[in-house]
Length: 397
Image 1 (cartoon, one colour):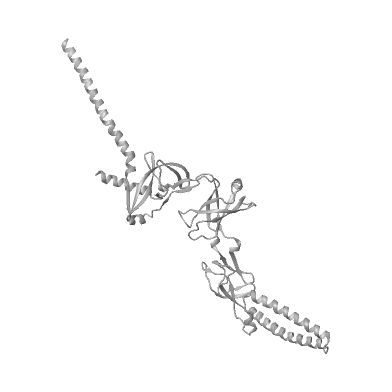
Image 2: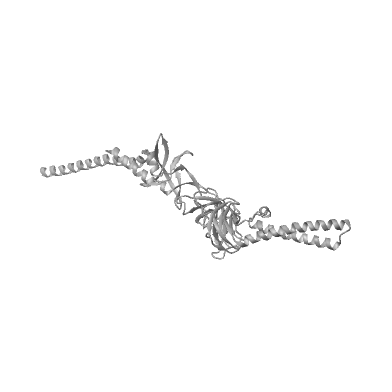
């Protein structure tokens, strides 16, 4: 009986001992795990990534202070780049002639009045010859008129002869003035023609300053009157011409800002301000034209380029960064602040809370107060995070 009691007591003591060891082991392990978790959450905030100037340039890092963007309340609108009619010019000829020399090619910059080509034709020479004859005849008739006038005033000439001389002289003057106007349109110097110099060719001049967009002729080609030979465009006044659909027209008005992109300048957003909203609808599609003046013109902006834009109809702005500037670690998000230290660049992660997303941009809020002049990395956040993890691994060894 005693032996049986001893066995029962031994089992109970052993069970209590095992349970106590298990609790002790559990108690010892729990704080470590919590510390590891805390370190994991706070470790990223204590790290730093250093890049040399060469690495910075090779990665094409983009840094800037925080941007304020309208992340909601916008109207999407597509369109093209255009220039006002007064900044486009079509150069034509007023007479049929042959192109003997072309002075420009597409893309050339031209000034107002600059010669772009020369034309020649027997008709042009004939007009100058006719003018010279008319001018000489007018001088003769003028002298005859003056002589008849003196005779008439002296009472030795008839009134009929005086009146006839006067009429012939006035008619010759009208003819000369008309032919002078024709020669001026042809860019012919009438004084040189009066002195007996007949131009073999006439110049075509640009009526505006701008760039040659089209050359429609070849050397030696005969062109009919009013044929368009060259097209000149002044791209300095290029603007955004957007189409806004009927359902959104009431939201759009003069003075609103527009953010838009063009394919020729990738990863760059241009801004414009609306200065005119059309009052009539286009039939297909049923939309109105909205014209906006570009505020930050960059690159080679050519009329006709397709653009995609967003018209800001709500003035509420918030701090935002591109998606490429944000990383996620666990359930938290971070961006990288930037400072230059001598010839190196220092990047430090800062925790943020994400908000509204608009295209490639995301509104953010900081968990701690940030100085207004702080600069941030606008791209390559995942690369910076990878470099930071690599540094952690090296320190662990």
